[in-house]
Image 1 (cartoon, rainbow, N blue to C red):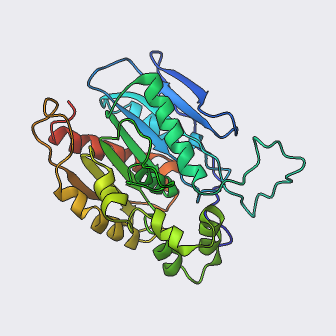
Image 2 (cartoon, rainbow, N blue to C red):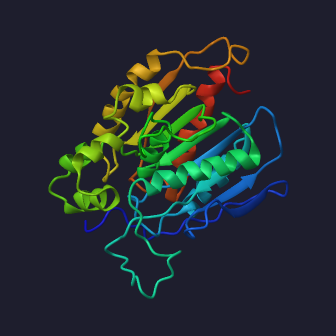
Length: 317
């Protein structure tokens, strides 16, 4: 294993029905990766947006917003109360297997992002979507691998600097699939494989105290998910025992970190919901690390499971 991860396959295109509208929109002007693939469906007040953040170790140029196409195609056929789909691309860190010449490469295509660039982009994309479509808290934030890291970072009390995250409305649910939640633990678990140290350092630098400070499973209290995700109702952690890149200890660490969040009541307006309970669920899926999005079946299964949980909680029809 010389890098983490590189995907040689190609995701089959999703099929869209006549009443949908799919387009790519830009949420930033600094880089060409500051874009979102958006599909709007028939308007429905009870619908949720499904917003995806891709993985790829913060650096893989092969893995972009298009990695959600297969999953979206499957979800479209399930009759779920979905108002729209969005798949976020964000600036990437340098990749040793994809060298670029800084002199001859357009700055808008050059990969050199460092933390907090990745999470800043995700938050900017979410703000753009919110300003454009105004869905409030009616969205499910879904992340695969480091996309799951970014999803939970978006609701931490503080991760990108001294100020809290800029989300005007937090997601009702977060679904982490094959997620990375503790950077130091991931590196230590795979200490014999240099690529782990390499890609974490490439995204966050060499300061391991910073690694801990941005790891959703490590940060507690007011700076963590525990107090930061005030209006959240459902967290789903999906993991496959066949995952060859991210081990099960990541889910265990995140489950523990979310235990205090689960015990507390959600902060929501009284008129919206008398029941403020929260749910934390661990979902077992199958297949290798990238199979979840490559064929879309397991990623779609995790999202469908989240909708089932929300329905049981009385939060969706």
